[in-house]
Length: 284
Image (tube, rainbow, N blue to C red; front, top):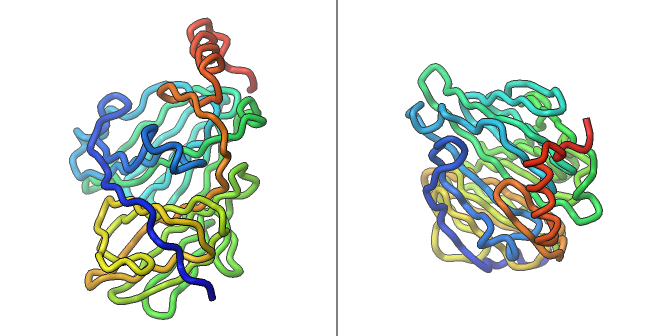
C-alpha cells in the first residue's frame, strides 16, 4: 500500500456569528476557498446555551452551491421556496442543492437538555451546473450505514464509499466522500481516497495524529492533506472523532458574495439584482 497522505496545512476554527446571531466556529471559508476546492465553508455549531442559537437562520437566498447540514444533537427545522419542509435531528443529514436559486430558512432547537450540535458544509457547483434546478434531500440517521472497526470504533458513511459500503447520498457533482470516523483510544484506521481529490479532516472530539505527523491535533482543527491514495489516522488516549471530506477540485474562478457563489462578478451582481427584483427563483 502506498504511503498515506502527508499534511499540507493546519488551521484552527475561528469563533464568529451568522444568521440572526448564531454563535459558531468557522473552520474555513472564503479566504481558504482556493486551497479547499471544491469545498467552500465548514461551520461547527455546538452549544448548550439556547441564547447562542435560537435566533437561527431566517429566510435567505442561495445560488450556485450545495449546503450539507449534519446534526449531532438537537434539531433544525427547514422550509424553502420549493415548498419543502422538514426537521432533522441527531444523526440526520439535510443535503440541499441550491442550483439556480432557492430561498430557505433553518431554525434550530436544542434537545431536552438545551444542547444543539452539528455542522454545515458548503460545496461548490461547477459552472455548467450553477443554474441547475434546486434539489432538497433529507437523510434520516437510520439510512446512514455504519461500518464497525476492529476495536470499538466505527465509520458512518454519509456520502461516497468506504470499502464495500456506499453512503445514501449520490449523484453529486464534486464526487464527494463524507465520513464520520470514530476511533477508540489508540485505535488507527487507513482510509482509501481518490489520489487527486482535495481531502480534509476536521477534528470533532478527542485528539489524534494524521499521517506521519508527530503532534496530536485537537477539537476544531482542520487538516488539509497533500495528494495521495490513503489517509491514516490514530487516536490519542481519549479517542478521536473526525469528519473526513474528499471531493474533486473544480479549478474554476470563484465570485463569492455572502450566500451566493458564482464564477464571475457579473453573475454575482445579476443574482443579487434578481433577488432585489423578485426574479431570483427560476425553478419550482
